[in-house]
Length: 340
Image 1 (cartoon, rainbow, N blue to C red):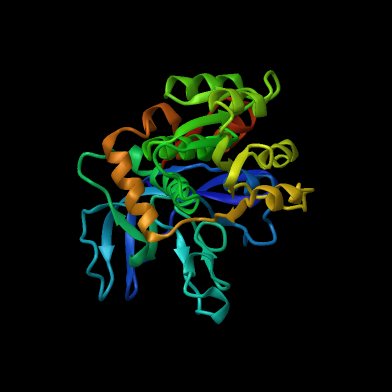
Image 2: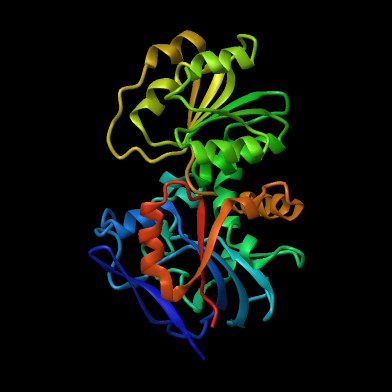
């Protein structure tokens, strides 16, 4: 059996090593991994930006679809042979600080960063992390459930309602998925993105598309809404221009959802929050219900997951794939095939 793992070794190197079969302990499940997506966090790891967290050498990856291979004692939510997606969160000891929100708890560990990840043939995880996939959902699409759950969480926290207008700043994988989930809620969606290939894709998926370098985004939103502006704005770009424009777009009591990671403080126009009674909402990761909704939406086909998957590559090509992502800003989502 050809059991391989993509192992981050530091210094921009992801090597191919052996996937260790770890038999599940009580409450654990061992998976035969089918596909694992590469996300922006994995690219940050590749660039060395997370070396203080990642204990090298470490199998990475967390956007996983798999088949249950073995179950440990006391596991009753899945059976051997079940097809699943993984919610890669290890909940640590509870704290009063958390107020019951374990997904952003003080002692949370992220599986695939703080612990061995799923870009490998065999992966053992807590049983509670697993969500069953419907029979008619492909395992390729199953590997897209984790990022789709991020989008479902963001749209839910943004309280998006049918008939509202949403602006999504940044058209990468998460931005596109947020736009599509918001569209499914019945919102009018305008996507702001500087990459013309991604903009063309957004337009083909029924989204409004604006290049803020070529067109004034504020005026474009004003024109599209007859002056009504945006009920909800999602900042997904992680850029200074994104932060500068996000407060210019909402209407009275509009919401701004901060999705992107901004590691450094940014100047923000706080006067806008006072003047129009705006809300700023942080959104990180996902909860169980977001995975359930992502699976439900994926099964309808309306998230256009085929169009978002740029390429599927073998695990032997993992180093070249990370390099290809760097060289191809037009790409959306690359999947690694982890099965033997």
